[in-house]
Image (cartoon, rainbow, N blue to C red; front, side):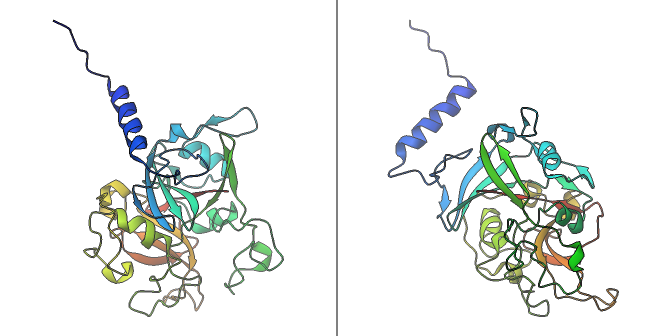
Length: 296
């Protein structure tokens, strides 16, 4: 009798990969051959999901001495972010298509106890590059309380395995500045909000069963991925770093803000759909860094 040997786990994965590619028709959705899956499994090129990418799949991040294995730790070092504490440095990254661009976002935040200000000082909030002809490189012309001499060009970028990535924060509201906190949706709903269009469709509560539907702009898309708040670390009961800083500055002025608009938008903390704003200098344990790597 002929003896059959079952494929190993690695072989199974390879077989599944080959079968999946054979089932595809037409050109790859990722024309840049960036790390991870090459075909969208949900959505479209305007807002779509490719799948998950292990840090090891990115390759080596350039560090001036031959390169270091890419993960949350080496990324922070390359960008020059040292405030706070590392966490979930080997979390998988989610790969998206957003308006035709390829974006990578960590499944969980990769740093905690970090302020928005420290991310800004590293040039890693807006991803606007170096063109300062109209002030866009600083992206704080809309903030009258940020001193002009403190503005930092927002051009943080890294090279990993020969590919260049802009490093920035996600868009968590529909406009910058947020407009308006006093509206029922806190200025969340609109086409510019990456969090609502990319993160919320992955969640088990999509399309319209979120803790805070009004901030989600429900019904959202439902990509049938069914991630939980635990998967994404988006609730304070599930651990530190669960409030993810976003780009926008808020027009909300709290009673203890001395009349100044000094708050920045965050998402999570009370569930994936939640939106609020903290003072940009806050660096408490629940404040998390969940960067975007935008293929450039």
